[in-house]
Length: 227
Image (cartoon, rainbow, N blue to C red; front, side, top):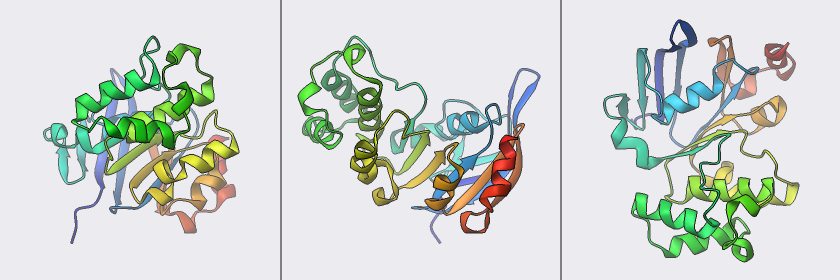
């Protein structure tokens, strides 16, 4: 049996005295989507950052793509695509320069930079500094950055923020279910997230309120997390 994309058992993460995550337990199969729901401060972004190896877990067990964290985190960093609130782009560089830099980091062929710029609809603005792009364009470029190296796992924090419907549709092959990738999707759109997920995790105060097949989660009950 193939290793799950993500395996967590009693995961805990603290910031000093404050416990940001505790008791998080789940198994996400390869190619499946996990929707992470909960209000601001519930621990959603912290969970993504742990899975991206940007934060170390303090207790429990965590494995991503078969590699235990934090010890083997180095093995998975090049296999994960992380799209957070910060686009992780250099504002004084152009889109093309940003992607070229990422390509060198990941050992990606330069031709893929042009392909990805075209895929996100930024071919004509590829040489403009990021600081001159609209929020929607920056988000599209951030998607290009996060997917440039064809990662096996996508960690997506409100990935459709600032995107119009046409852009959302255009990016579906890269970050949607059509990508075929294992995905962790953080979203305040409860109904939308449940509709495209296989598994749903509800967080409140850093604790696990529920973890169930998405088809079994009642959207109205899930929205109570935000009350």
